[in-house]
Image 1 (spheres, one colour):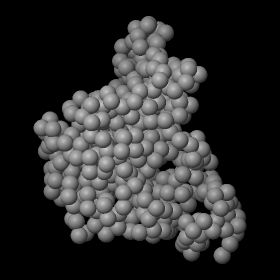
Image 2 (cartoon, one colour; image 1 turned 120 degrees about the horizontal axis):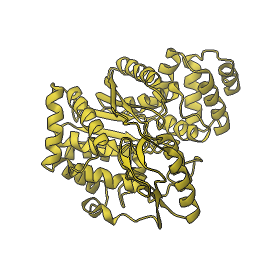
Image 3 (spheres, helix red, strand yellow; image 1 turned 120 degrees about the vertical axis):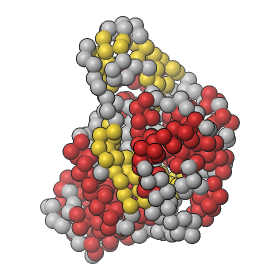
Image 4 (cartoon, helix red, strand yellow; image 1 turned 90 degrees about the horizontal axis):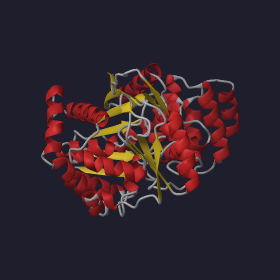
Length: 432
């Protein structure tokens, strides 16, 4: 079998066989296929799409490219959660400790930032000392002992996806439905959870720009979940504006910590409560969604969710003093305000434009091996529906150079639309 023949076949939109897909995944994982050859095939897939049989074959091949965890010795009710990504999406850091504090084991393998979207692994790694690369044995032991472990994709779990995931980020192939679905579900299958809640984001700051495409992706992943014998629920959420007030790694960790202490932005709260309630339902321990929403807030108010996150950070080597006092995180050397130039109401805060502005700060990756500056980002004072007076501070830009700060300020001004219409916001769009 020859990679050039496979590239040529997909280039002219022909269906690949499972044998051809298996060959590509196995050879690329072993470095027998170069990055530029893999990039050519990924680009052809992005342009021409894949059939359902191809997507299933790709998902299986990537899941089996390394170890497939068996967590049945821990529990038969382990629940995982995954987001398709967004700007300011720190939901995992809040939801997973809540679920663990409610006595449901959570095992999560998180990815790094992709394109304009932030990555949970990058956020966790911005906590001094936190080890996202513990061994599988330690991962399982943490779940047994404290009910939670959050790690990065290890070399042994879905290693093919890890390579393809990083490559997609650098060749403008982040928004392919087949590649997103197979990437997410291969990790979920490999990670060993019994039930999965998927947060499928849609809007300008997500890979799926509208509800129709988000629903298509959600339906596809639900089908893969059924095939893989995983209970799966997809929640479609809004990502037209950044989620919460903070965008950027340490800024988002601080916001997540404050949320676990009860200081949660309304849009974050809506998403957190719904995803947590659905995870509780899938676990089999909490069958009533309405009651679950109440229990979520109770475990925040009584401090158990915060203590669980603190326990997780300490268990994986992190300095919990930064969790106790997030103001300890190192600040970017330059903090510059974005000033409103007119009166009115915020009609739009384009999350996609915010994410692209963040790339210029060093908040995300434009090349495969780019280093992220965890200090940089933005804090928004004004969001959709808020009143604005000329001279008000719309946001603060946290940057490492005067030039990047000034460039970002101009881009953030463009992301805002100030008018006079009151826009109603709904963050939970549909549950599938």
